[in-house]
Length: 267
Image (cartoon, rainbow, N blue to C red; front, side):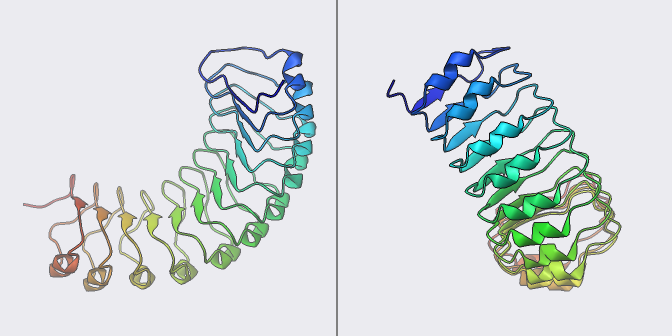
């Protein structure tokens, strides 16, 4: 069969037939929003696959044979029940996008550093307590989402990811934010929600390309004058802090389109 794309999203399959492996011309397979707990082994025959989307299923583990799908550029595994990743994913060196959001991962293996073509890595809503130094090898990354994990610190190697345009660190257990984040001067979006900040670190003022800055749910009592340097900001979220007044330098942010100040202490 000459079929190259197959979309079976939200049909609520619990199982796929082994015959799916006969569709050897497939380049895209969309299985989002089903109830799959396992994958038929015959999928390993679909070696032309470029996109495989398994988001929103009930997978608890992945088979080692997934590493045979070496042409994959996009792999979606978000919103499953994965507790670990097979080492064979490290062979998928053509991957540009890897979605692992909303699983039950407690650690990220060192081999993640082999996926040097990644531009987008979504690890949000897991249970990660630390990250391997090898994540710093992913120098092509433009988007890194670490929101809502259990990270207490960040490896310094993330400072190598100078192509990052989007970085979300919010809702972790970071006790301090490292100064080297200020070297990521290509950042356009930075998420620092619920980071226990009592004041803004001065290095944020170096990130003059920022258009979106999320500072929701911190403990900020005032804003520094230098915030006026972030003249490209279009969205600034200061919801749920302890601000009683605004710095006059906010008036310099002439590109602001959205300013959220709810749940503060303005009178």
